[in-house]
Image (tube, rainbow over all chains, first blue to last red; front, side, top):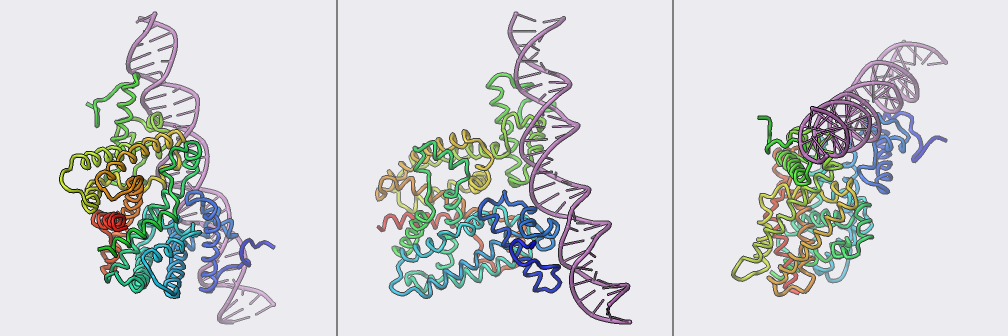
Length: 222
Length: 222
DNA sequence: CTGTCAAGCGACCCGAGGTCATTTATCGGG
DNA sequence: CCCGATAAATGACCTCGGGTCGCTTGACAG
């Protein structure tokens, strides 16, 4: 057999086959990204892993950035779904601290998502068509507003609109904290060799929980 | 005359002349960066603007990332100095809200600094020697601890160590919020064409002030 | 004035994203 | 069942930018 990841499709003619190819490429890229970094994922490798030629990748994604933005979309909206489920189904009393913990923990182990988020504006939105960006933002707005409304429902002390605003702050903190926590090899090395730099180290989930708790407590204490 | 920015130095032999060259290159790079982006600044352009050949740039900075990390250092430590001065000299009563405002306003108009910060971990620490990273972190720790102590002094409700932690959160929020506020041209276009996306827009200074105020209020309300 | 040394130079290399003329699998119609 | 049309797939090729290196040349010592 020749197939690498999925059954080998010979020529995608129907729209549905093309969709399969897209997913095949996204999966290949995600698998590579999981174990490396944005820079380290070469379009040629993605092609090879998907069992296709390099040129073919560009039939489905016009640029590397477009490919990764699509990857982010998948991950992000899947996360929103999970978060909404948790917020909807969780029984008992909802405090600010609990929401903070819920959000932070929902991101634990979601390394690809958080790393992609951290690159969103810096890299991904650079070399992408306005159509793709627009589509992304549209869907994002919808998701944020739904989830924001849910948060407001759970925390009675929130004013209308503060749920959405809270989620924007979540995004900012995730982006910022991850950049501090997810260290390049060089940085890891430095920390290993210089223990006195410890105060600059950041534990992602822990710090995110802390910051979000403070934010919500600040809103409640008003 | 041929000189572009500074008096034309013919061959930097003494250590002091070399330092002048370094600064000359940093200034050229900063000038270019101010009006464009990290990607748009080519090493060849930096060289040209400084009145030197491309190869010469690499005599002073081994990589593009090293050049920009050096630029960030300058900007960052200058900012710490200003912040410390403001925190030291400001009379009257210091509230959490005032500290938040002070910090946010001290970053207003410091576009190069904030944009560089947003790229720090994502790009700058990627292709740089451990020595440079280590030196940077050492100096950063020192600055953060000094400024953190000052913040604690101003806000009596802070426990030891919370000043530093607060500054780490500042960094996270600056990084995250700037990525949202500082939009690539494509994104700008999308926002212009789709007014209903407004809720996703972020005003950097405003949102930073808000978030920091909440954080500090959360600490005070404990 | 001259020899030495290293700052400066720029043609060159390399690797990665992206293109396009060509090949060829698939399918509908005769 | 074959054949011609269509467009998916291919990979050699292009471009561009970071980084290298052997040669050139200016500054200074003696």
